[in-house]
Length: 305
Image (tube, rainbow, N blue to C red; front, top):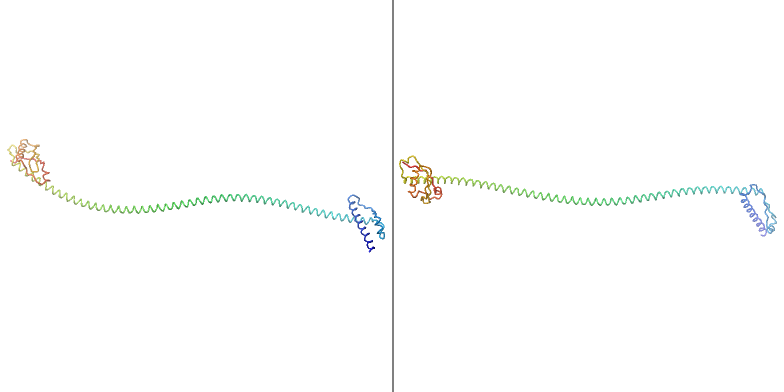
């Protein structure tokens, strides 16, 4: 067991020494020429005492050190190349990430711009919708008012048409009534006119008959008066062919109220006037109508010789 420990410790020391040599070589790789030099490593006396069975001093072979250094440089170069590749990859990824970030920022900006545009468009659309809504409400209100006005106009039109129809019916009715009334009045007037005509004709006939009767009576009484005058008239041959106009006014009893002479022979007129006055009364009809025609009598008298 003690022997095993004595062998392990020198091995550990050897590894440590090689690691130290590798570190020195790495440091010197940057600042020293590429030709390696032999290195001498001195160990602590106590350590030498412990490993005196293996080695009393360690002398590094330059060729081995050179190989080790070359290997370390190769490894370092490979590491640097790998690191460079890693850095390049990192830089590439960083560039890609930056570009991606820039694209993302651009996308975000585009999204924000699009969102802002959409927001503006949405606001404009909202305002437009509100305006269209107000316009639609206004149009709907106007349409409702127009429809209400149209309905009211239609109602008034129907009422006017109905009123006109009733008025027309009433007018036709009144016209028919007027026509019938006028027809009845016309017929009544015709009947009345016919009756009046018949009455007028009858009255004229009667008047004519009466006039004829009165005339006949007047002529009769005038003849009687002529006879009365002739009976009371004193005539002579000097009066032959002569005449005189007399105007005699008599009372209903036949009393002679006055005798006026007109044109004619003066001697004849005077004697004729005396003859009338001498008679005192003259024949007069008791009929008032006939008397009315005889109240004033105008005669032309001629002496009968």
